[in-house]
Amino acid sequence: MSDSEYEGHDDDLVERLAAVDEDLAEARARALRSGLDDYELDEEDFDLLQGVDAGDESVRYLPALPVIAIVGRPNVGKSQLVNRILGRREAVVQDTPGVTRDRVSYKGEWLDRRFTLVDTGGWEPDAKGIDASVAAQAEVAIDLCDVVLFVVDAMVGATATDEAVVKLLRKADKPVFLIANKVDDVRQEPEVYGLWNLGLGEPYPVSALHGRGVADLLDEIMKVLPTVSAVAKEEFGGPRKVAILGRPNVGKSSLLNKAAGEERVVVNDLAGTTRDPVDEQIELGGRVWRFVDTAGIRRRVHLQQGADFYASLRTQAALEKAEVAVVLLDVSQPISEQDVRIIELVLESGRALVLAYNKWDLLDDDRRRYLEREIELDLAHVAWAPRVNISARTGRHLEKLVPALETALDSWDTRIPTGKFNAFLTELTQEHPHPVRGGKQPRILFGTQAATRPPTFVLFTTGFLDPGYRRFIQRRLREIYGFEGSPIVVNMRVREKRDRRK
Image: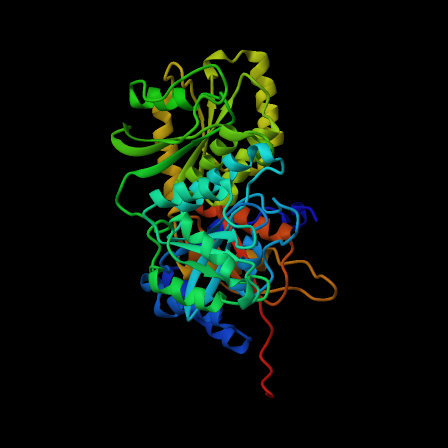
């Protein structure tokens, strides 16, 4: 369904919202909120609405959940263990090694403790690259978790790949649990004793397939798992964290060096010179920033070998730790699928976004015309991102990067009061109601901003809203409130009216 269906004629939404004062907006929002009591709400709904009921000023975002990472070589049963811990079938399980390509996060709960469970994979199907890629994946997982579960196949015993991962785990200042999987009954327990030689302490015999030993394991994990994640928590007050992203040889290291005013990073015409992210605190535009220079992302992560594979994983880790991403695009070359995919990674991560068009000093009139057309076609979905035309080599227009970063981060931090947001929804839906679908017309009952970083809105509705209508709401939110440089998330909670006869 095209978005134009929802456009209608030009409206006077801005003027109508201006006529709604704060007191009236809040009174309307309270009335809409009380109307939700006639609908079937679940525990999560009440958690979300608790802050709204107490007033916007008292809204407190939940602390970051502690993170448990599951690592190990292919086919030892990591995904099966994930499903067993979650109590539901979420992770893909298959007898073929290497089904899990990337780190995948799930929300889990045990003994009333909630946590994030990260299932890792990322190995290549050919044996040549397996040691490097499993170790690289493990290193990223260790870096971004509070507790590590290292899974070994007890029936096979420790392998060279296992020992390579153990070296990383021994250096990590994190609690590590050695999981001896596939111990399906007591007769197989003697197989576990050989794993003491890995030097990670007592192995925990479990059967992810049958659930044997998993409850006892979780009890032990809860004893060391922090209440709030030490790695996923948001840091306030320090330098804002900026990830520099882009395909290989696009000029990321040159940009960092020019911003720092000295040679901090090796610059070479050979693509892929940078292997690790290099964190640097740099003063730019009168304030200090923490820049992360990342290795270039290549096209297919799971087909890479060795160092390139490792670099891609580190890039994703850097993005997770950043608040805003500067995606560098080489204007001397056509915008590629790779460029678009990197931007998609930023959108998926929910980070603020700035587009920096590098090598602008090399642009001639013909190429400029083609470039504008490419931007119009390939980057229309991120037209809201601030755009800066620079030369990382000469430093031209580098000063324009700072206001772009500040704008994107301000948008990322923006919160719209519940009264204002519901006034926006009411005026918008009166002017442009959702089309009737199957004889029914979905209505928005109430809306609230559940979070910032990125701005995340939740709509309580009587039916499923068309994707095009949700995009229309997002677009109008941008027109009214800006949000330049930040993704906007609009989620729905479809709720049915409570049966009063029960």
